[in-house]
Image (cartoon, rainbow, N blue to C red; front, side):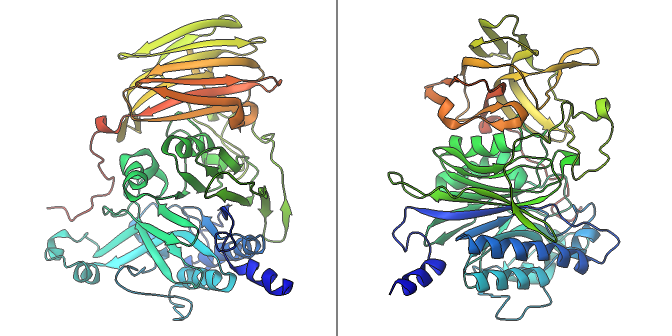
Length: 516
């Protein structure tokens, strides 16, 4: 009898066994990108890592595993390159398709991952390139104007999330709605899927900045948001894991983020986050390795949930557990100061911050109260530090943030941060290290934005334990408080308001339709 129960426990999800949690896995992959190889060889080399990660996750009891954006092939800079790696993904709402049982070897990524899900009894979410020939796509969607709407090359190409159930069936397909300088097409789509341990939604990377991602949570009543990404740390005022955790807390949803590991472009940082307690496990360490994260995610509160959180390094030849400290982050990370990365898989490089339009108030003494106002938006800070060993500023901003002057969105920012001077600017660089210990802070702002994203970080870009800080809102007033009895230095504490109503229209980098 006991052996039968043990056998069931290997394959049944947590809710079936009467538990109030499910077990999630995330794979932050350092992709194999040997451009000297054929596309099928590059995909095959990365799928070997996916296979190893999935088997380990299943052995640890994972119900679902999420892989990062562009984990199977290099970031594409042309439609031809994207097409070389693309596979046709049928719409699961219109066609049941199991690439494993149907032996779809002409689509090696779909076939391999479908079989991994089936053989290991696990849900899998992967990111890949989807190709839809115009005629088939238009016929399926009953589009009469295909000849005039179709892209010049006769193909619709999509940055795509695909979800597989435990049998290997494709159960959901999501097209990225906010491509980041990508040569792909877009379609409005809100995608969810149900499991026996909750309802899930999917977005990709840059989508998280815009209102549609919030609407997915609000209007479709999901429990957990899945987030494959190839993130760059200069997109918003927070780094990758700060933004991921703040997203979970601000939107009251579990958040499972799988990022690409490529520190040379400031791309790293993944995690599994509870809507209530924030980080259950996360990785943010520029060490050049692929890592598997495991954690139990609460479904309902009020019960003791086993803490199995772990980070497992997965290499071509080895697998081993690891605890991260942030020691791999350099004292200085700006290319103008330390030069280009010699090894882009390990040498972390950060970006000069876009602070020209911020109002900056410097902390002049260890204890005090200061204010910063910008474009009608004000925030205040009361604080107590043992000693100011670096320059810290209270920074306020109310206006349009942008990437390369192309994509724009409205932010209200109130942030306390270490900030160094550079090239005549008093506050220009945000290093990942700090020696200054703050005993307490109270950060307060009056926000028009509905969504406020909070963060607190310590030295070496470590997320401060959620039990040390709190956020409360009363109307427009939002207050973040932080207290610490330890000697852990503070790096940053901030409130990021996203006023989606003031966003300008999103304009795709690649025209979605044929030019006329």
